[in-house]
Image (tube, rainbow, N blue to C red; front, side, top):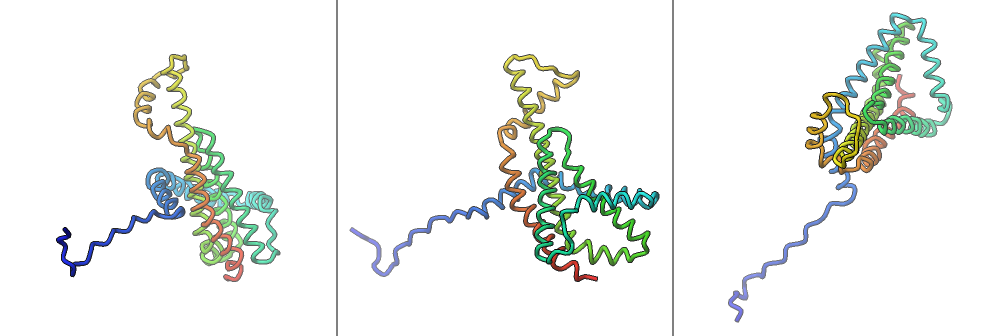
Length: 249
């Protein structure tokens, strides 16, 4: 017998929880990767960018005769970019050039231990120092040039470059972990592996600290980070540099 009052509404079934969409889930994963893996590398890359700028500026300020040679090398590296092209075509060409350079920087992270992606950031800082040094020697308004010709698109471009470097450094460290894990596996299997003096204790501690991390493949993280973060930043930077920067004086 139903004892429930006829005037009392029946409890409605709770709706099933909604699962986040693909992009929401991917960006959540990216946020976690930033906090867990990339943030410390980003800080290192930012410092190296600053050091590259200072070193480049001081070098070409002290030896201005080297400016023309260095500028010729920069122009040679950008020879596939036509400044006379239509604004949108110029922007897309800049985007392609920056994506290619960042992809190469990330790919160098496949080499373990050496942290080769940091060289891209160092080079970018040096080029900025070169440009500021040239502007100073030609008695151009340096601050105005920075604010109008570098900063508007540079905020996005340099952030993308630093993020790509961070991803590349993470990849290099991950490849190093895989190499060490393979050596530990061989040792556990009883196969002789050459070990430098004093390395035993480090490897044992390392195996305990990274047992879970060594099982994860960094490839998916690298692709996700490049597509979701680096590409949008470089695209915005290229659109600003191609469509807006030429009109800023």
